[in-house]
Image (cartoon, one colour):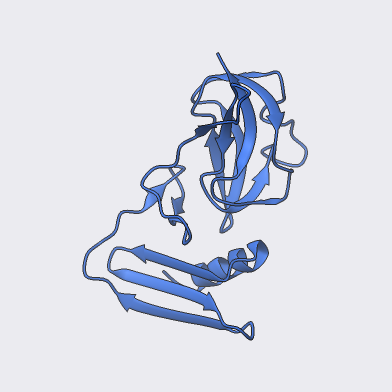
Length: 162
């Protein structure tokens, strides 16, 4: 990991209000923490055994979240009582409904989606990660705001399963 990537991690933490971040990649371990006076404290140490890296998109290496490490992220979690499912954010980043500001949204309420349908993009560390529905159904509602930060596990869409 080079200095540019570490600066990108700090920038991501600042934009999303995170106070601590930890990454283990192979024999490298990085820990970034904001002290009580707002100063940044970083430390790197070698690790005895490699730790697998979670991949979301083929081109992007995504670090596991510091708060809730998970082996696999469920794409759809049941919504309370309405028979709806939710597509949730698999990472921390900025939510975008379209591939560019001039493009149409990937999906709209009322549109049917399949497991491999791209529903949005989440930007993390300057990498645009396409998020797939990973469930079949009809989009009922968009729960996240375009261009706003999202947290790991935050509901992005409500889906009525078919």
